[in-house]
Image: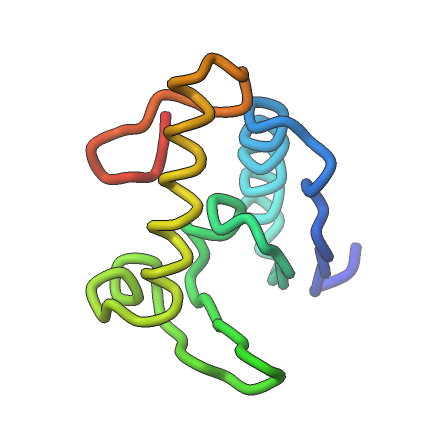
Length: 109
């Protein structure tokens, strides 16, 4: 069992429901075994509950923090989150099946 696990766009080909189910299972295993993980992701829903989020822009660290702190800061992460959530809600409203019901905190169901 390695102490560090690296996930590079691990859920990019999955629908939202399958992605959330898989991530819940991965999170449970990581916590149970006290493993450190690194996730590379363009879908911010994949990483919103991470202990530390590092946002890169053109190869440099643009900002870092928790989801809530980055949202409150109103920087690049916040802009990207808003853009992705708008698309997510629009898809759900159109009935495409790719979105879940959005909760009050913006993290989804």
